[in-house]
Amino acid sequence: MIIDLSVRIGTGMPVYPGDPEVRLEPALTVARDGVNVLALHLGSQSGTHVDAPYHIDDALPTLEELPLERFAGPAAVADVRGLPPRAPIPPEALAPWIVPGRILLIATGWDAHWGRPEYEAHPWLTAEAAELIAESGVPTVGVDALSVDPTPPDELRAHRALCGAHVVIAENLRNLDRLLDAQAAGHEIEVFLLPLHLGAADGAPVRAVARVPG
Image 1 (cartoon, helix red, strand yellow):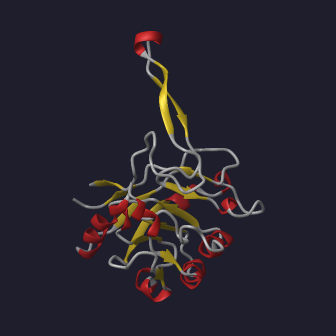
Image 2: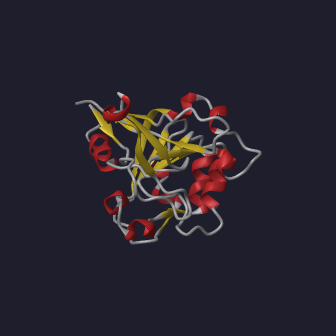
């Protein structure tokens, strides 16, 4: 079974404060041109996306400099649902699900607030939690929230710890509760977070999906 972990990209969708607004409009139409083609205006961090280390430092790898293996593979899902708004996520909340070489997904449940002001009041990773992830050999970490850091950000401490270790970050995931159910049933979870092939990019939108038995 394939589970969609991505939000829908559309005109006026939520974006991180200060990021480019998303706009989709017809560039060509069947009635006028014989074919339908959309013109897209969006930022590299629009919707469900991945961050390359270059996102926070010009000296770090860009998206195309990372191996594709970083964007697909077995995953473990940490259940931190039930936290209050703007709550920090400490390292001990994640430690049971951290496996070297395995993608770590963090289920906060905050995708339920997508499209509402409450979405910006999401839980976030402490610097210590991000450092634990980076030091444990986790190649990629994803969250069903706007950012791994608080919004608005403090000093991007989680981003700096993760990106500095060349860990890929995925944000604005959804449906992680379904993966938690599969994990609780003893099923293996395989995740695909393949980004658009953009040159010299800090990140890119992804169609994130998971494959579970069923």
